[in-house]
Image 1 (cartoon, rainbow over the protein chains, first blue to last red):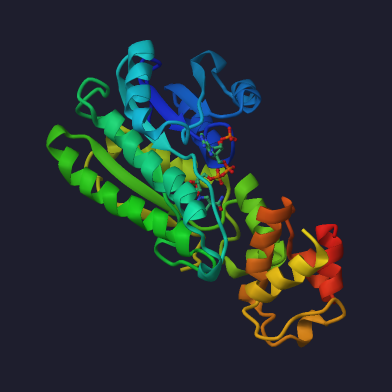
Image 2 (cartoon, helix red, strand yellow):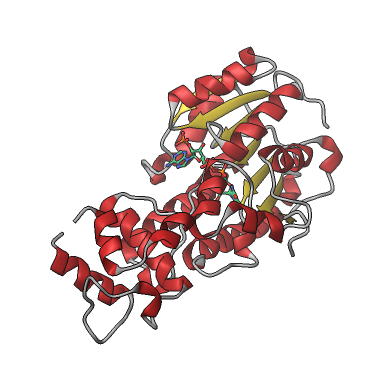
Length: 249
Length: 72
Ligand SMILES: NC(=O)c1ccc[n+]([C@@H]2O[C@H](COP(=O)([O-])OP(=O)(O)OC[C@H]3O[C@@H](n4cnc5c(N)ncnc54)[C@H](OP(=O)(O)O)[C@@H]3O)[C@@H](O)[C@H]2O)c1
């Protein structure tokens, strides 16, 4: 695992639950300072209680879907408050399982706002020269296996995540001259609050478990790669989408 | 939502020409497949703020059972 300094600030979205919580805890354990964003103040507080170095967790209560136009300014504001950012690990997201014949425009816009436009505008904010540390800075986005191998019911969710991956590949090229790296992670089923609900929706947990040669994923499995990609040892890795699926595909 | 409205809505979700009635057995409807179940789950979530899971669907026998779960 990389070693970070406490003056290296990472913005982690979705830090109040699941994968984001796992990422925040591991970064914190690796010595970094974590700006932990989420909507629920109580859950961010409980993250702090679990942290190895609670003093280096900085909770920021924020509904990312609130005012998308001003998201880049929000990131700039964080830089003004804490200092230049070393990394962004974007884990906030929502899922939706519905067949295409149930799609409504309003529902589609809501999903794309959070799963596509939010990360794009956060990336825009982070990429600003005034916001990040420059060489050695990185962004990692949690996409989904649904982007690459969508199942029935994942038309919109998989579509938004596929769009996210595509835009981030472009951004990786645009930012490479400044030595800022951009990657995506595409997990299959991870046992977070979101994953647990998904499991019981359409199948039994046992049936899902049996599909995975290495069993279902845990938040820490995804966090490990996200944190590695944020460190100096990953200096030659950009513009990739990594599938983590316990051998499923 | 009234019972009549529920039946009309369900008929639409199942994309069925013939109307439904409460006593119909779900498994006997040719339209009752995994995709329809997914659609009905989404409908319950949106319309009644109820999350249905796999075991719920295992327990529903008739259209009436769905209405009972919806609380109408
Ligand atoms: N779990 C899986 O099986 C799985 C598989 C593939 C991909 N993913 C992706 O991984 C990411 C994390 O998922 P998870 O499993 O960790 O889900 P989770 O446990 O449900 O956590 C979702 C996180 O997103 C935050 N969030 C949601 N809406 C938000 C909003 N409007 N503004 C700010 N924050 C918001 C939540 O914050 P609050 O709790 O404070 O509301 C929470 O911290 C998502 O992008 C998901 O699509 C998950």
